[in-house]
Length: 110
Image (cartoon, rainbow, N blue to C red; front, side):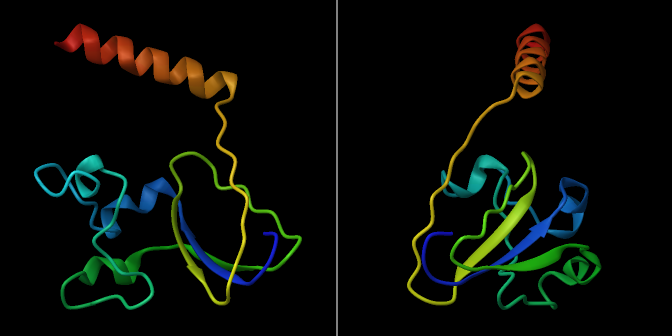
């Protein structure tokens, strides 16, 4: 975090069943399987009752802080003031190998 204050809520991928994952057939961005129907900032517990059982944790990012969000980790981010952040995505060797194996399995299944 370079400037400003951010509120971040993280959920392990094991909590996906509680996060109401958008599926295909919806708007292009929402149908990718990596977005949630739950508004973490203002959850609608009537529409999303399983969210009450989601186990995550929250952090505040201040200038000078760094946060590693592992691959597959659900995250909600809200700026609490004008903010400037730097993001960096990378693939480690283990991730690249796992992706290659998944792609090969998917191609074989076709």
